[in-house]
Amino acid sequence: MIRLARLAPAALLAPALLAAALPALAADTYRVDPDHASVVFKVKHLGVSYTWGRFNEVGGTFVLDEQNPAASRLEVVIKTASVDTGNARRDRHLRNADFFDAEQFPEIRFVSKRMSRRESNLWEVTGDLTLHGVTRPLTVQVTKIGAGRDPWGGERAGGELTFTIKRSDFGMGGMLEAVGDEVTLYVSLEGIKQ
Image 1 (tube, rainbow, N blue to C red):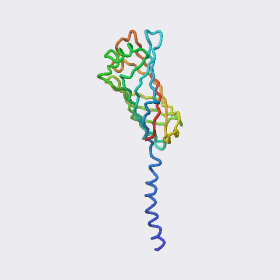
Image 2 (image 1 turned 180 degrees about the vertical axis):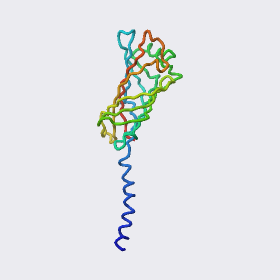
Image 3 (image 1 turned 45 degrees about the horizontal axis):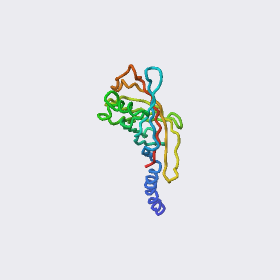
């Protein structure tokens, strides 16, 4: 009896110690570092060459859960007014109602619904892409580039993805005779652990 009484507090304490240790195993949440995130795109012009551009304002968050990949999440937010093709006149045109209509639709947003790991650094992400007021499902492959400590004592992780959409699927069907329908996007994200 005495021996059991001595074990009982230890037995009661074990679940509490386990619960205290669980946050160390919990998912890691990262805020996208806008200074180290890039969204670059290319689209055909007149069917003879590609015009390249980028968006200068990119943000979002991602959660990486190595123990339970299904609990991982990704959200990317791009400001449409930050479109930059290196030509001020063209950029003004891209911001107007013929294309992004940045005043009415200030953001492009991708929100994951499901994430699964395919290989150690390759993830499949299914979610909703909202562009120009239209939301459509999208599945992309995300390659985790790396993770580690930065020189300032924080932790970072990053990855990249490439995908192609049809702008007409999102109500951006203007000037299809001049500007291609298919747009390829290259997204590179670096996040700071929160």
